[in-house]
Image (cartoon, rainbow, N blue to C red; front, side, top):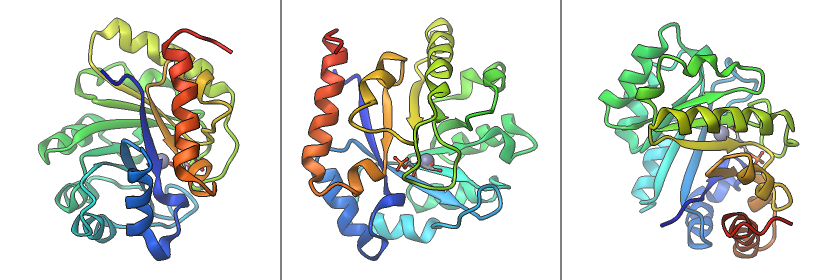
Length: 228
Ligand code: DX5
Ligand code: ZN
């Protein structure tokens, strides 16, 4: 049974060929698509809306898509992205005044529920909502852009959240998002992540298949207990 999942953040793809690039990265061995939505309010960048997601579905992209909402507010966007074809919707606690209600709204619209944490956001926000979550996403960069460096403090945070999940007995995926590369993915897995969101490390490489293969080899070394 697969224990590690690779998701590609298409923020770093060539937007002039987004459908082809998404297909190519999936054909190269990625498990799911990470769709970064930015509103130039919650984060200082502006990306794509539900129409783009719908176009990917019409382009026969059938893989799971995690819509990462870096927007404020979020509630009005949840039904739109659910309708457009999202499988997961991930929100940040700071983006809503009523987190419990927003998480229920994601579930009500048939999507799996993700909760995202910026590097400085305390994990205390988990305390009363763990039962509602399918995925916890820890940002290892400050949100808004691809191609940034991994923030090392994310590893300690990963370990803490891994402990919380294992103690909770809920089946919650633990994703890490930002600055994930071939040379740090094993350490990130050792800290407890099982979903790895990768953007520029793949899309800026000249061989998607090889990069993904290298990442999987690194993860295999962790799952087989062989630590470099
Ligand atoms: C940043 C996004 C990330 C980013 C990851 O705000 O949420 O998903 O695109 O890209 P890399 O892997 O290039 O850091
Ligand atoms: Zn993201």
